[in-house]
Length: 197
Image (tube, rainbow, N blue to C red; front, side, top):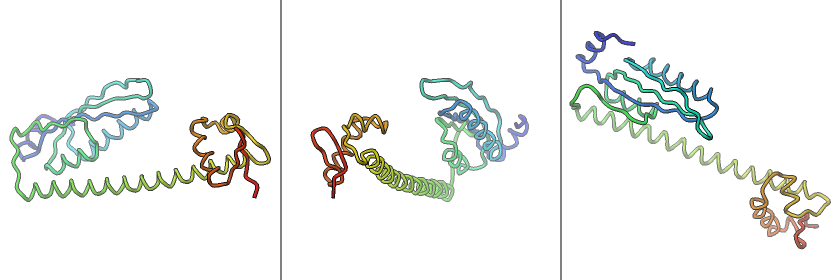
């Protein structure tokens, strides 16, 4: 942590004094605690930290949460933008100086950094969407194979397939009907079986 003299010296050199609130939500409780500690360590490595106040972890119905209020010094406006992207604070406030002015070159640097980070985030989102699509496809194949193995040499009603698979009847219904349309399964009354070739 910086002394008052060090803070004043840096403010005179044009540093920005910033206050931010960072929230962590998740489960289990230990993960929330460890994540907050890591965030604060990273902030201390990159920024001149003035103070940090961490709230006690609160238990909610399905998750745990905590937040920290930090005050730090940033050399440039770009550093504040980077802080926002890296730590996603729920609020941020520039305390000093009261008025901020910057050149067109500084504004361009901030906008370019912003654009670069948006493109990176967009790239990650597209990768996650592609992985999600592939995962859904693979899960569909696994479910189809599971159903075929379950019905090997026997006829079962949807209720029985649901019991064996642990998948609700509502979720199974569409899959089973699709397999009937594809002529992989046969349906006689309420019983499903593997269609004989």
